[in-house]
Image (cartoon, rainbow, N blue to C red):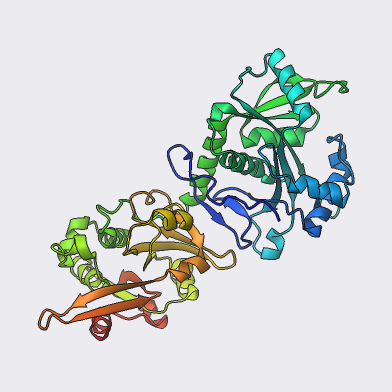
Length: 455
């Protein structure tokens, strides 16, 4: 059984003070950070497909030119290599996350190997003696190597893939080692000065050239020595993540004031999208929830009421039992943000939620700003203070299982209590002269009020 990937690898440390958005691709075992070309996983020691992929890489002429021990390996040796799960051995499979089809993403495009063996101890001693690295009893030294898989015509092209894989592999290793101090985890690589492609990849990954040294006693010429700069790696990851998200339809520019103000924050953002500036208190007062919001938040009808009051020249539309196709049309064709109410995730992972969650009511408003069904991705603009700065990406299938809510409605005249259940509810705000929401089966505020009456 392959070592499971850690899908919360970037939970700590944060990248320049911001949590890295990391999510699963359609193939659940893959790990990928937003803005990175590659996705990674551990090789499966029981997979014949993985075994054949590794052999194809190791037997490629281009790889054997630079990797002394490259060549065909046996099934037994492969299983030992891929199945060695220690703090000294990490073998990652590299995949291209930019491809559209699952069958394409599944193809192994290369490997990253991070390890420490007997030879590494002598290399470390030699580098200390030569002044390339400083000696310290607390440091954990690991060597890194890589190889890209040739295409069918024999050509090799990483196109940023390998540098991306190197970054994520280093972050994954640090998470597996329980986040030692960056100064205590030294990852280094030896590269032949003539191997231009590998030099380009390792520098782009965040490694810095520190000098030259003989790889071992049999080497005729010195190799370039590269040491990972954690600061450089984190800056590259952060910059690429922000670039990837920059063109997305970021809507929420201010976090919710309290845990109960997700509704006002979302309404403020939707109105702001239409150039109407209000604050969250304006939404609270217009929705007539000033005395109840801290305990009960805002119901959909109260949100609609606030939009009616504050949104001059705008209409409120909603739909129950919405579909992914509805989201795709509204976002990609009509170019408007879509609000949803769902069971929010107020932690970095579902696992953490199960351990720490003391919240009984997870009902939450957010805004969907992108969706890609082929990749099973949905991008959420979340007003929750800890997550509002950078959109969150989830599996759409997972999100769909939490796309519901319920509110208690009390009739003032009879004090009768009724539970309003919503399932896959969406709502949008459009100019009054716009009619396309009707073609999607969306309805106006009056019918939402009736829905609340029926319960």
